[in-house]
Image (cartoon, rainbow, N blue to C red; front, side):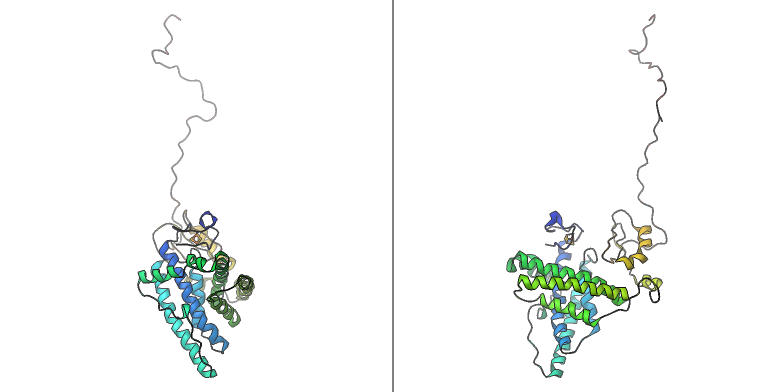
Amino acid sequence: MFCYQCEQTARGTGCTKVGVCGKDHTTAVLQDLLLYAAQGISMYAHRARALGASDRAIDIFVLEALFTTVTNVNFDPARLQGLIAKAAAIRDKAKDLYEKACKKAGAVPEKLGGPAALVFETTLEGMLKQGEAISIPSRREKLGDDAAGLQELLMYGLKGAAAYADHAQILGKESAEIMAAFEDHLDFLTKENPTVDELVGRCLAAGELNLKVMELLDAADIWGKSTWDTEAYLLQCREVRGPGRGFPCAGHQAIESVHTPLCRKRSRPGGRDRGDVVAGSRGPLRPRAAPWPARPRRRKRLHRGRPGPRAPCDRPRCRPASGR
Ligand code: SF4
């Protein structure tokens, strides 16, 4: 595996054997493949949109695919496999949308390659082979460290913005302009030989996109003034039980305002409370937190303050000689 997407990365250069966050090789490769699939979907969706056709289900899936691969959000290989299979179906839907839009406009559809044409394997072994072929080390070899690094920077910017955009759409705020920008950037990432200048420009544009997404989220009235229903939101949260301790739970400030009281109650050593993702629960939802693992109690000190006069020792060599 190779991953250098977050600040926890090993030695500041990249996690190669296992992620500092706990991500393993299988998960890392499946996440790479899921992102590749999202790029394939976007190639069609971006072109269809230019012809005036779009599909909300496709757009939402792209957001979810990006959000899924943010650090600590989803490390479940079985679920990632399911998402890749779903991505293949959504890509076919996007292709269909594009071809129909072309027909309507009297245009000839482009023949697209790369992630738009990849036939996704259905077995784990097959998916891992496909994922390894398009992972970061292979792109670093092909494009060099600068271009591959900037591609990743752009992708990480999109992932972060997608996390917020996904929250916004859950809260009922969506924007066609923002979705178009996501799909445009993902389509750009499939370009064969991007220059460093192009990539830098795209990274800056991704920063601007993030600000627009934050505006959208602000407009969602998250502070409960009118439409935000805390109870309804919490009912939507999935409860995921699994081995291990902890309650990875968090979100941006808005979601945090709902989650924080829960996190405080439930987080235990080993759990994470991150500020950038809503990860779900790894601990059972209970009204009261389980007690923290008991620490061994300190033994009470026998003497407080200065010890009193010691009793005389009665060992023979210490006993005062008779007559002295
Ligand atoms: S996401 Fe995990 S594997 Fe990737 S760099 Fe961060 S700690 Fe390492």
